[in-house]
Image (cartoon, rainbow, N blue to C red; front, side, top):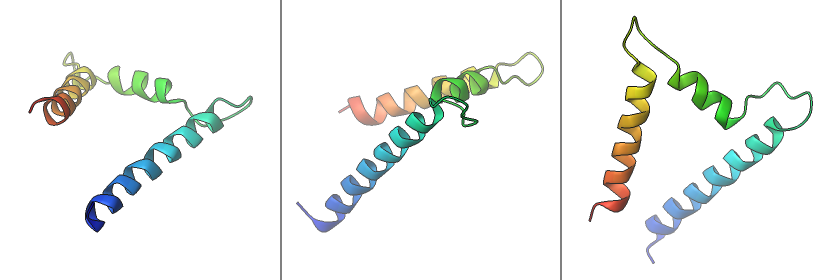
Length: 72
């Protein structure tokens, strides 16, 4: 394994752990931090006029993620 690959993997692991810590902190009683579900619901509900920009963005994100992770 090359050093660059190890650094990239370590970066992803740190990011996942940070997201998990923030989610745990958000689920505490009397927390003002929104949960991931609340953030996603707010983003999906975003519209410009009658165009659902949030839904289009989430669809585009999932398409991009699936293309890069599963299309080989």
